[in-house]
Amino acid sequence: MMDRSRIARRLAPVFALFVAVTGAWVLIKAWPKWQAARLADAWREQLETADDERVPVLVDELADLGDAGLDRLVAALASPRQIVRQHAAAALGRMVDRWEICDDSARSIAAGELSSLLARHIGTFPADARDNAASLVQQMLVWPTDEAFVDRTQLVASCEEVLLAADDVETESPGRLAIARRNDRRPIAQVADDPATLAPLPGGGLVVEPSAAPPLPRVVEPAEPAPARDPREPRLLLDETGESLPPAPLPIVDPAVDPARRPAAPAQGKTPSRPANYTPSVREKAGGSPNAPQALGATDAATETASTAAVDGPHTEREMSLIRLLHSDGPIALEAERQLAALGYGIRDIALAECIAHPDADFRLQFVDALPRTDGIRPRRWLEMLLADDDPRVRLSAMTQLATSGDAALVESLARRAQLDPDPEVRRQAERLRGAKTR
Image 1 (tube, rainbow, N blue to C red):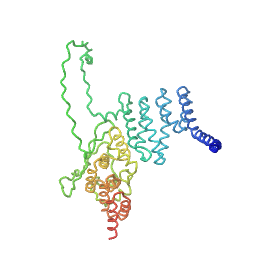
Image 2: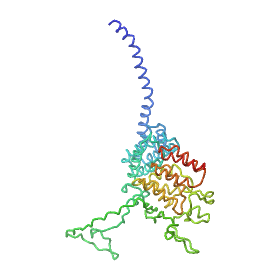
Image 3: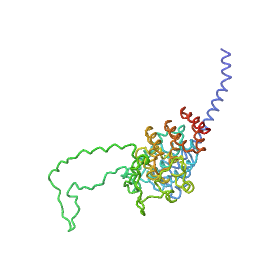
Image 4: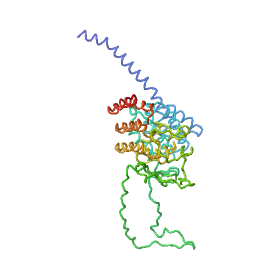
């Protein structure tokens, strides 16, 4: 017993020192965050009473506080003072611009946190703040993200919640009513149910007393359900007024097999009609025919050297991020279409992009087979996009189609890519490609 008590007395100071060091370490680590939270709360309160000249200074101070300041800046978008909301939105926009050039991990964490905060507070924002919040999530929605640092499904859900709140037609600004019109394509009809609501007559107007008779019962015909949309048919795009533009069908019939299906050539000396917002392609600017069929391995010198349009060059990660959103619901798909159009995509290009992002793998596989036989497009660019498809059958089919181009450098690149593919059948394609190259 004596030995145990002596050991306990000797270990007591060591244990006390360990507890003290651990407590100090925790305090040192937690102190900056606690201090930042205190400052953020104090500056957030000052924003509601500070002079207008002081507001941008306080907002910048909040932006420099990191996570603690981010939460308060988002809350400031609900401020009753317009100047506070404006400076808070501007500061958040600068933060989003900085995050966009960060690496995937930092960008993913920041996008997930800000979209979650905006979705949590969006119900308290006035109309202008909802507009600003929608602009922020539209920018973040197309970022490449790392699934290890952010749940992409939750990110998209938060962004969609913000966009839907911003599209509320009862509190919306005129600039965003076009989106609401696109979601509701029913014809607008103004009906006067009560005779007392009729406008005055040109001769001076008569007072119409409301009728005392009970209103006649209405017979409402049941609305016919809208016909199911064929997934192979591209959605109609809309112009700035919300009116439908004519669709551009995607021909997949080989003209050599069925010449009757070949597009009719315009009459001699006449120019085919184009929509008002038509932009001539590089091929047309060079004097060629926009609908001339092009084989997979063919090259067009004018197109290769003079092309600056986004749809003529290699695809970018930003394009792929937008294309993956084309089959989303609600305003996200519309926003993706608008941003692709801003990158140079025409109606037909967006229809092709929708086929690449189609949720049915069998449809995408048929699309790969049809691409080389489609008139007026450059199939190589679209096939290269499909090399990153989730389905190994689609990747293998796209790789096989590209290998027929006869381009030795392309075949070698395909072989290297196939060698790293997780699917064994695609990896075997690498051996076949290299074997064909040596023969």
